[in-house]
Image (tube, rainbow, N blue to C red; front, side, top):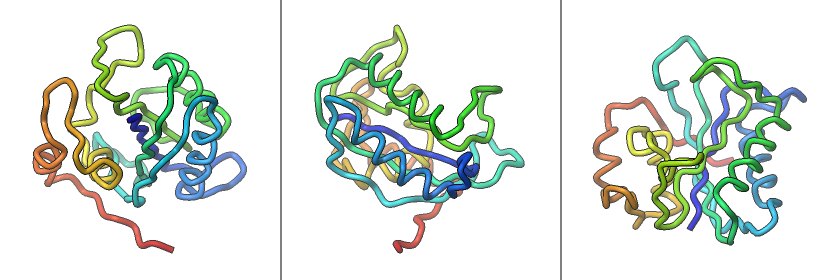
Length: 165
């Protein structure tokens, strides 16, 4: 099971809203050779972490299956981000698209990039709530923590599920 976090808080270069960009990204992820998207979470709106003057983010998680090298997947996701107009400037800057590999099955690795599971995923409601939608039995492969215990630890973060349309 491959879990990919999707987020955006700026319009895409073509004017697409953050929600439209996130939905577009799911289609681009599904087109990565060797990958098949099998589930997509609900979409959530969350305050930026760390707090800043940025607009709120739209966040979700895609669950995929397939065989792909972690570095190849990271490169493919960064190419999708660039296609959406992302320019890497300062850490935690507002962006038209952010794609992160949360986990790739039981894989635990500290180097080279990507570090798996994502080192900060368990501290962020904007990852954990949508992750719970697509993988309710997920456990952090590094710590063994359940998704339920991780979600309980971020209950103070500002996030809400967006209305389905």
